[in-house]
Structure formats: structure tokens, C-alpha cells
Length: 322
Image (cartoon, rainbow, N blue to C red):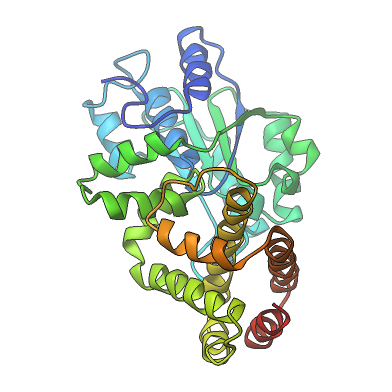
């Protein structure tokens, strides 16, 4: 078994981590940066498995230690994330973590601490963690994953090796989906188009078909609006007003859609997607200037949705403006 078997692409990160183990130059702290669902946590757990495996330089994959990591019950692997129904990692969690760090590992020669969604740590929590990074015990290795490095304090970033993850290619995402048994080419194309380079997002396509139906409905409503029919926008705005998360997902999809439409209007070939025919319909009724105005309205809506606003009214206002 190879150390990072099953992890698609990210070769630069794999090479760096493999060399660190082989050359005995493993850092006391790493910061993995990249979009959600791009493979940061999977890589962190694979690296942890390799660090904790007693039988190989890298992970053998079949010893008791590797099995425990795979099943999430290794005593020397601590995974910290926001608690249930919470959006932030709070100082109380970090203090509980710190109380364990001075004690030697139970089974392995090393303890690995994975802080999942490190950009969700409050400032107080990050400051509490700082001393453990400044004066680390030799047997502790931290791996912090985050989408946005700017949300991590500079004092934390400067004490970590920072490794950036790249969006996964279309071919890479298709490979993962086929390995999961998905053979329908139409569904594969739809999932890849919607993924924005994120394997997690592509897999989520199949887990939330209701959301995917909502995106298709959004295209139909926006097409109707651009043709001058505003009747459907009010019912759609009502639907969008029920969930901020769905609003953000649909809005991201629409921004990607009109960005791709701008490229086609400028002469680029249409992207391979199951929505080609729908896109041709949009191209037939849009000019580059009109398309740019739609994008501007959508970006303005995105700015508003960051705050606690009346979602329904914001969608109504945007669609009426369009």
C-alpha cells in the first residue's frame, strides 16, 4: 500500500510529506490550505496514519495502528472540529486539547492533532493554541486544515509549514466518481460541472438531489425573467428564503453559469456539461453587456447574503432588477 493511495492528484503535497517522513524532517505543525472538499482532511488523516504506523516508512495499511486510524479510534490521533450545532471552534475546546498535550502518547511514538476547519477557531482559541506551537513537545505534530489562510492569525501561520491544495482536475474528479461506482455519463458531467474542482462537492451532488433540482429550477426562472416573464420569480424567491445555505449554493452556481456564458458570448467553446442546450438558449437572448449586468447583480446579492438579511426580499429585489 502506498502512503496516499486513493487520494487523487495533489502530487506536490504528497511528495513534500513523503519526503519529510523518509528524511525524518517532519515539522511540528502544518497548515493545509484549500477549498472545502478538495482533499485536505483526507490527506491529513493519511499523513497521520503514516506517522503513527510502527511497521513502515509511510503507512502499511494493515497493522493494528493503521486499522485504528482508518476506524477513527486511535488514541494518539486527536481530531478537533466545531462541536455539534456550533460554527466556531471555541477556546474551551482548545484548552481541553492543551491539557492532553504534555502527556506522552499512549501507543505510538508520536501524537497527531488534526484541527479540522482551523479558520473556524475564534481569535481567543487561536491565541490559546499559540504557546503549544511556540514550545511544542517533540512527540506532538499538528495539522490544521483551513479554507482561508487569512482567517488564521499570522502568529499561527508563521509557526506552520503551509501547504496549498490545488483544485482537482475534471479528469481527477471523474476518476473518483467512477471508482465510487457512478457510471451514468450525464450524471458524471453534471457533478463535475458543479464541483469547482472539489471532490467533496462532486460527491455531494449525489447526496443532495433536491439542491441540484433547485439549481435547474433557478436556470428556468432566470431564463423566464430574461425573456420578460416575472411571474415565477416570487415563488422562487419564497423558496430561496427558507435556507441561507441553499441560497449560497444556488447563487454560486448561477455566478459560475453566467461566467461560463460570458466566455461563450466572447467566442469560447461551450464547456462540456449536461446543460449545453440550456446555455445555448441563454446565449441566444443575451448580449455581453446584459450578461455582465446580470453577473453584477448576482455579485451584489452575494455581498448582501453574507449578512443576516431577509433572504426572500433580497432574491426578489435582485431578480426584479435583472
